[in-house]
Length: 322
Image (cartoon, rainbow, N blue to C red; front, side, top):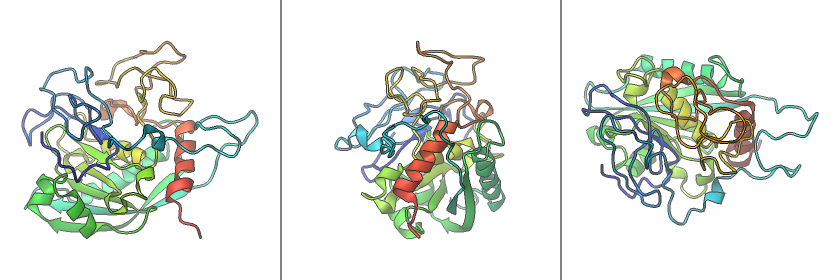
């Protein structure tokens, strides 16, 4: 799988094992360097990665973020709060929960190759799914994050559609709207092992033109990707755009995903097991969390700690002062 240097500011890529380029996937999500729902056999320090054969267990060397070598991991940590607690989900006894609504302006950029690509009806279903997921309608907490669709653009460009990484800078410079508070969602067709990726809020200052989320049009609600057709790829990738890490970040070692109420897990979830407990600490693996790698049918929730982290990251990196 080829990967170009222009797409270096990625946060998380999902991988799906697809036996044919446009066929139905037969396996599960994994991770790719610098992105999510991503690839499986790359060195996490390199900007490229290999793939996983269909049917292979991608846990062996998969699910890693390949950050730029000069990007210290510490930059991904949420800033310490005035009360001195650095991790989301940690509140002094009796402290009130964070309240309020974060309204995210959303522009969706639909790229097509002839008849191939997402219809507007699927885009609107995706927006409804985002608001339901972040509103706690599938389970978990209401995060207080709401997405307000401002517009849909349409671009016929075969190269952008089929090789979005190779043309990332060109495409985003042409289409991107707004500042750090505006979510630009690009609907394209990803490479064989990828469903999507999103940038972290901390990276906006260094490369504002690359900020945003790209997802495969086939992962939208009702799409043709078996196991990944409920629109939760976008939910997951936008979680990164809002500042969340994978629930399996750092494995069983602290600080994990830097959220206290998501139990540590040694490796990502594959499929939808009845239960999984891979770390010695309290709690089973959060297999139903949107920031794990379960099938769409298994995902359903964010936690209070994740909601608080998103709110703090929003205020720190994306909120525009009145």
